[in-house]
Length: 550
Ligand code: GLC
Image (cartoon, rainbow, N blue to C red; front, side):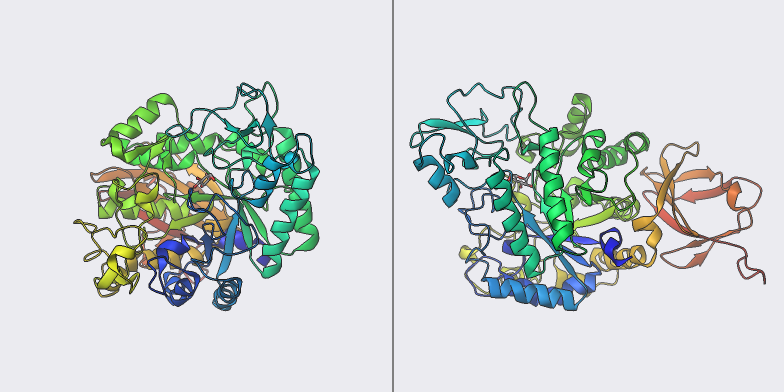
């Protein structure tokens, strides 16, 4: 059972740079993160996903890796990372790191070697080169705000090299078996050290073929299966998490026949949660889940509200994208590439009820929830910072010096703190929220705790119920004999709902957050009234022989 730990996990996504600076240089570091493990444990999460912390010129915040088997000196040393693993594991917290293999930094020695080596040499063949920059013309451009082509000219090599992301991130050549072997060694290095899982960054784009869009190709899946074989042969209980920003039917192959990735992000679900909330109508969520095929038994979706990137709108229709921009990104500065660069609280206009409802959905939808650091306290963003940096500002710990993030100079911080009301660190910070019973932080702890008490949320089957009122999103989560009913009011007004629960006539709904007993299910549809944006989680309790269940 414990090999399925990722199904019961609640994941917390952290950038080491942004979390806590222990040596006053203005950048968060691994020792700083270790200092904060008690806080992380108190939040109730049991898995960390760490953004890249490897040596890098940091032109894509570390997703441009210059050395795979080392730590960026700004963040610490390998010994610090080893200690982080030990201290996290001692608290029952697992760690997922990044395996960024689609591309490297142009500063990586493999690339430097490749451009200097002769055409057709083994060294050159680590990357994808061409004399013709129109090749693979069917591949779309991902970073539409910065890149015009997926090819860049390298004067040293005298050829064009292929890059799906920034032009300083050349793509590795996965048609070259030596690349696959090199990547396996990277993976072994971190798994041997003790990491529990790796997120496979930008995985749909590993292999290119003429006449295709160069995404999700069979040859790409073959590489993933080979990596998975190595993982299964050499390591126990470790996982791959796929970042494949694709439609559900294109993501399913990344689970393979349980022989590729254990988990994959559900990208299309995420924007539809925001749409459903703003439209006060469950249809977007109902429709996308209806289009989501079932997964192999040991596979799992990873679900999220926000992350370190823009809120991507690639997996919606043009009309839906216009709607999302209009509703959630009126100021053009809030937009980037094909998405919205804002944090959860500002997206929801700091509406406490809306923030709670979205988190309640996150905890109960089919999959493992991921919380982006700072969203548990309702942090704001800074749309005046470039790229996606506005959602990567320092964690706000206290109302004091540098928000408790760093004792260094204020001007040394890698990015300025959020200061403007209502999100400024003077008000929004961990210490203040610890002092307030009703704070978002304390509320988050409570729902995370409830989520972890019931396997049905992580492992259970999902069954959508469709009572007449479309402003109410209702579903069951079932695992063994555990039945949980979730009822969510997407509307800003009170709503009635009548739910057909005849299958459980005589059972008693027990509300899980307050342990409140509700009237036993009778002959009539079960009637509930819901306040604006409220939700209920009920455990359906079978009648006890002595009548205790009624
Ligand atoms: C992934 C990362 C993103 C990065 C990109 C290129 O999409 O999430 O932050 O910029 O890969 O490496």
